[in-house]
Length: 131
Image (cartoon, rainbow, N blue to C red):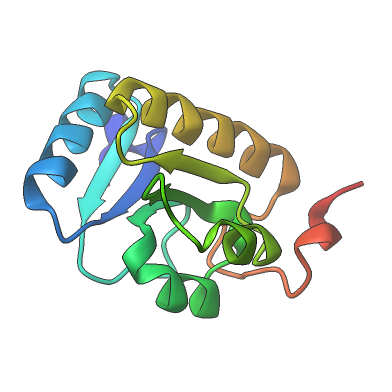
């Protein structure tokens, strides 16, 4: 890892829609603060935020601390209660502009940085990282 990449925040994008993932990766690349990984399956050992579509919800909540997840959901979803119960607090509807999703990612990163839950070690209880 170069000194230039050392201070970048890791983002993993998990989307079946490659065009959507590429557009979001472009926005994150342009801000100059992110090391973006487009993947089919997130690596829990990597620090940072995982941005994914709700279609992959089962795998995400089984392997990641919910504070690390920014979820893109259908506006007519029936899963919102389930998403909330899983501890995911950053949800953006897929019809929303990518700039709003970018803002949600930045918010999640700020909260994650304060909670010290950014490593691959997931918290057993999402409330455990709060003072």
